Length: 402
Image (cartoon, rainbow, N blue to C red):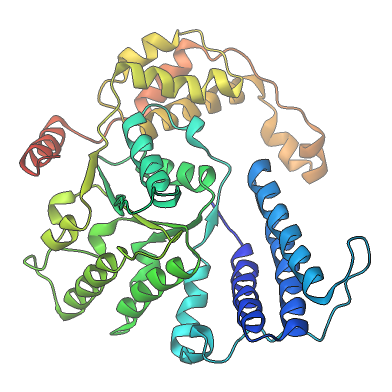
């Protein structure tokens, strides 16, 4: 996943749009018109970052509607150039942005670097239908219109747990690529600091920025590093981080219309999580090692769907990989492909020695992946999750009523 630099554009849009509303409310029509027009320009720039065509059109329509409001305020007919007033100050007096101290602003900018965009979608995730449905349901219930005098509470915390390599992070990437929401990918290494107190400030900034840029999805990988149980060797710094996370997760249940922040935590060791944190993730989903049918689907994704043919049927490969995670199956496929490429392109090393242009001019030759190439791949890629570990996950799932 790559950094999405549209974050600052969207932040500017929000500031100018708020300024336009304030100016219009005070009867300052020229200022309001200029602010609406500038907000439209920011929205058009933001639309360029949309991957989905429908989302892009939605943003462009929003920009057009803002321009229409701007024209109406200063009575400029459609089709005539809209005269731009002086540059709008994007920091309105008394706004949250202007009142925040320099320290908060610095941490907010760091958090914006965690905003990610990916082209992976739900279709790229084999299986996990229940998990995908849970995320879609939470998004739908939060943003869809509610009937008059009816309150509907949507899930604001989902915990994904299971052995390493079972697709938890891949699912998060698909969430980023499939929802029209600001997506924050926050690993523990991004949030923890050697300086006392900085980790808690980063955690607060993460949720603060996510609220500002709602609808948002926060994905916290290796969440146990941030929310280790307060009964397990926790020092004062750990306790502060856990306390801050508890407070921020509680704060997600706000009632402002059309605001939504979904927290998704992922862990390979759920039994290390603080009990208070677990209660803030009411929907806990076990992501187990793939069964036979899911292994077939994973092989299909990494072989036939990528244009590769095999001498061994995918069904046979799936039977031979009982106990493998999805990530290990991917490694197995890639390793077998490497052996095939080496066989079909024996002069690849010499071509590299001829220089970059020679490599660019060369077309890689491919062939059916042979049985012996998979055998060599199996020798190199072994499953790391044993039966005892699987049993521990299942027992934890049963004991926590998942």
